[in-house]
Image 1 (tube, rainbow over the protein chains, first blue to last red):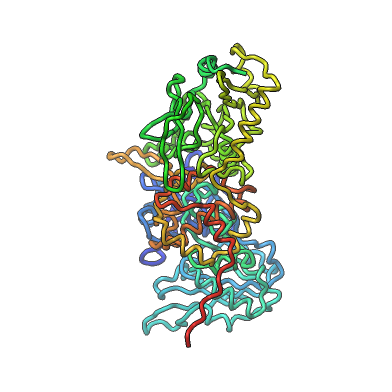
Image 2 (image 1 turned 180 degrees about the horizontal axis):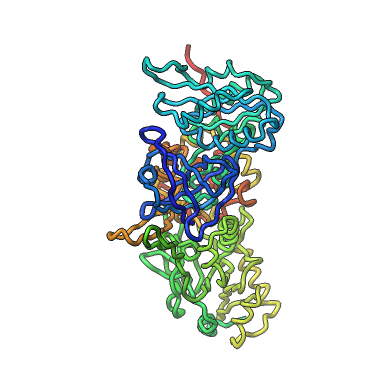
Length: 268
Length: 370
């Protein structure tokens, strides 16, 4: 389906947020927070990119892309009016209906924040349906933080704490330096009645899930969004297999209780 | 019943009904699948000798048409071609237009489908059907399966262990049993579908006697008793999924070349990759699908590094998927016991031997010296 680039925001030196709208013959496609699309650049190929916009605005499709390979590189250099192909949405997203009434801990590492943003929008829209919201966002350095302005707005909201931490920083950084797990003790939540959404490097999610279970959060209330090589998004290319799961079709969001045993195996 | 002399009329009838007949033929010293235009295209009077890492053609003492086991090809080469264009896109003003690849040509008649291969096609139907793959279903639609009951087992065959053969029991359009008795060479023909029956009309068939049926049963029974390999298939799913740290993975990885031969020869391996092929003008581009393998280093590439960088992890992924997690994904094993992965492994790794070794309890870790 053709989609037209309507706007682009440079988030960091290598990361751009694209706003797309349906092109000729394409329909707006509703999505659930945590799902992804296959985005195609003519002559270059297709990549799996999480949807990072608001699910209430399906005609305004938002993707935050880091230039990593040739397709993502082209995407970050797209100008307004260019056309890309979009297939999707694919996969199982964040189980928002299951976590109603609970405190929610969100831990994002690097570009793990974009697939979580639609979930944050949804929770803020139905603010009373959720308990405390604790967000911990880690990145390599201050200049790698995305959605900076928007985050400042979230910080001002009652019942929501947003902590930021980076791996390395200069003297101009007044925030925390260290791993996201080091920020966890400061987060206030009621463990048995808490759900957690994690997205970031696998080792970060693994250690965070361990820290959360150690504090008493049930394993089936912790959800991880996995990333694997993907070509087809429909469970036929075989690339994204993780144990018995096709990450594209059965995930990318999985309960920790279901995948913990496979996370423990090296090179699974 | 069809006498040997009437066999050409079966080929003619298949063509008359609009099928492109493909089946076993000899090329480059192996029995592979290709177009069958006349009966002399078949490997008449040939057989194969197979063992781990070994495949040789030999002359038979008789003139059997189907006196051999399966070769390096499987029917997936027609249903899921090794390299296939899926669509073409052309640049328009500010956009591009995508044209899906049309599937043209007559429907296929697969001649000489063995029981293990019937099972493999059934598995592929599930795999590609679950994904709703348009290319696969276009090739599969209207195809005819003319099965052949195996008259002899190959040296690496173990379909009897996997419950897939050697007898073809269901799903076929036609099933042939080739019977060679002193002084008589004929086929017992079973009909499995309306399409199969339609092909038979007008052929010089005679009703089968009880003696003929018994002779056909004896052929399959003899084959079942002469399997070259066997594998204990009980509880395989749990064995494979629950033993990711078994020391046997290390041991097999010392021999495995990660060459992908087993996955290419396997009739059910479906992994593939997509390739974008633009022309030099930049105005036109094509999307191709190509067989890929979990043994390739780039297969699991993520952010420039391979998730499965060791051969151990790749072999484990292949076998644990084939015999284990395939059950979770598709409700069946991914192995049909055809033995191709054993025969075509250049170092002769034997899946039945590996499974037997995985069944042995891991030895306790050696005590560390203080």
